[in-house]
Image (cartoon, rainbow over all chains, first blue to last red; front, side, top):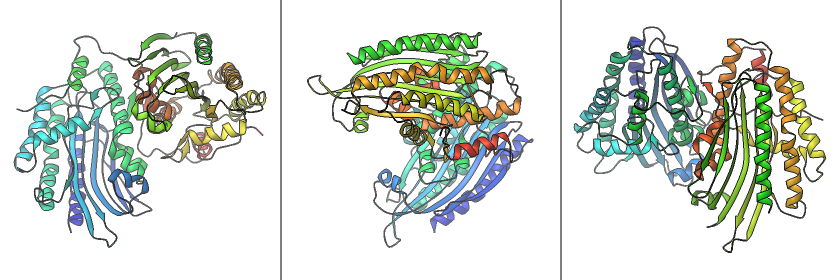
Length: 302
Length: 302
């Protein structure tokens, strides 16, 4: 069954990603926590803290199922139903402000009718980059890698998913993007255009390429020098990350409403954050350049 | 008119509170920003940062009016309507983890029918204390001060408003209170039991006593010694404050939905915050004692 196949896949992907990060970090290793969800399911969380390269990094998998919580019925526009959901979520907060934060999530969902027959099923996911200082070549590299994978799957459009990402990771109350985007897709249902096995191929190809789309950027930037001013700027921008995740992010909301494990859901929150009142960067500074970039989505690849 | 009388009152209260805080802080002073709301109204924000006693303190007033935003119609269970709202909000984040954070808000609201006649009007407000280390005598003092004011107004019950506060400032996803509570009341409408002038007397008495309910606690604790461990604990607990304000707080939501000024709304967010994965205090430590206290509301005065 596809749900089992996908869960086995994300189990092994979690191993690979965690190992690749430890390889780069060299100082800290991931701590693992297995948790159970009272209403059905659970997960395996892996968090690394206070590394040489990563200040906080989480790569979690979970599988939750049972009765769809009432609070989620409206959300999915169904009445009483049983559901199954599994996925891998990761957020890496680097120590250096020169290295961008990255987020990725790949998930699979099933809704059942009264007889336990699948009445709806879909994949969703994406990955996006949040730099504190903009290196155009990094933004281009990240987007090119995403585009390459899409091009192997003609039914999945880089342009469409890139736009969805820009729309989704929009901090509406700040009128700015969370970062420089990436890909986002949801409700890719089992249809003639998107047979579920074909979408499985697409999403696992994308996830397989994740390490290659991000770690070269880390390698390139991790030893650049920076000072207190850059670190402070990073912590202020991390505040925007928190605002997005707690005010707008549907994944966080889904986790809270389905009574997921709080500490696993909040692994996405940055380790140290600042809110300074009305902080504005200097004219023509690198910090101001970043703000200009997040005010209006850029096409990083032509 | 009562709305003008109340706005004049909060203007002068803002002056008094800001002056009292500067007197205690002695190092930093408030910075003032006047802002206008495109759709009608605006406000006067005053923020103090990097003080000797207060790391970040905001005391803001605002007056917003015009067409009730569509997103708020459901909230107030009305269709198209004009509204007026004004209030004073304050949040003080002390530097020392021995000094509690305090929040207060007093507000007045009017909804109008098509002819501009008031069809609904109410006061709301409250104040609550969020300590990082629990000093029982401080919690008792704060609550006794609130109770004293309530007792001068037999139509306003300390017990009722105290319970509402415990219910409201509940971080449901953590299953714990934001702090040790205080008072909370909302929709105190113009009725025979609560003539609007009488509620005006109550709320202004309460607000007049605010400085006296909080500053003596600050004076008592501000020079106590503490170390990095206590500071780190304060920053972790501040994370819970952020979670409450961004996930649950209706005041924040109201500000965002009515397009209030972001930097004024977010003055409530603490200056430096930490999210450490699954951080748990040591058994029988002062930190654990606080967690026990916020797990279940306490009756601080008999």
